[in-house]
Length: 359
Image 1 (cartoon, rainbow, N blue to C red):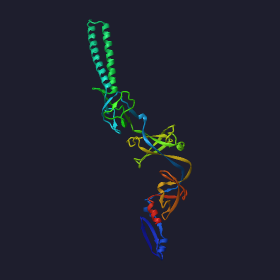
Image 2: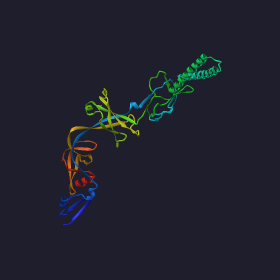
Image 3: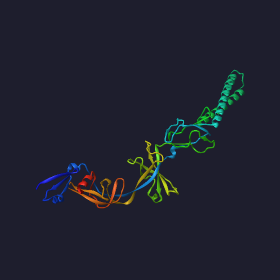
Image 4: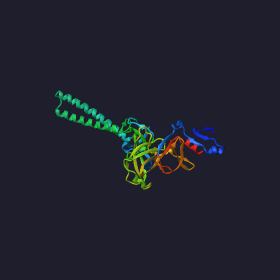
């Protein structure tokens, strides 16, 4: 009797020659070489705590503590807008210029205060020299000093007004951001008229090194979440990567339209990948309080509308086993039937073996 060795899809198959082709096919036997064994991974099926996944939709929102709304402090006509939504700005950049009648009034008051200060200062210096030479009384010097101090206080006040209002010559009110950050909202454009009594902000600037993910939690899921719970965050923009955070806040009011509450997850965002209003998914592991047989998700093969695993007994004994799936997470598949604890399954490069066994 002769022995014929066939290599099929990288798998060694030993065939014993019989009297006819039918006998040869019937006697085919799978053999995994030691070299091929090095290319696979084998794991033991274990009883593990049964965990489900709670998947919650949400969006990125800035932290209110790291956000400022900029209000116009005077009315007037917008003559320049040099900022766009999403732009990173610092405290030095001029964002908006408003030409204002109020600003011109402040400018007038500043010029008057400056002139009166110069006059009072000069008069005080003259009275001081006269007092030293006995040509002026102490009372006249005291009056001059008081006038000088009042004029200086008024000038200081007007300089502070100029600084607070960011005023320049010509009645221009210059809008700058009080913090460095990203412009996330803009409600102003060139040639707009700003009323003196306007109570709405024109720009919103936020720091985004840390952001919140606001997750929507339905009423029947509220009992499954708690403060400090670890959450895996994935965005539709970066589906192959994830970040982790913890539930930092749970709102107490239910939205009457969506019938949800918000659970806020704080995450670090050093590269500014997560942007305000970006849609995300939060994945929370929820324990069901019992154990179930589990294997790595990579061990499961889906074929012909069924699930299979390859049970490894030896290089010459690898079995294709159909299994029933109870549930799965990102890492594990829980098996309800078809596999026993302690059995070993192949978790890497098992497809070529499966094809060889089942062709």
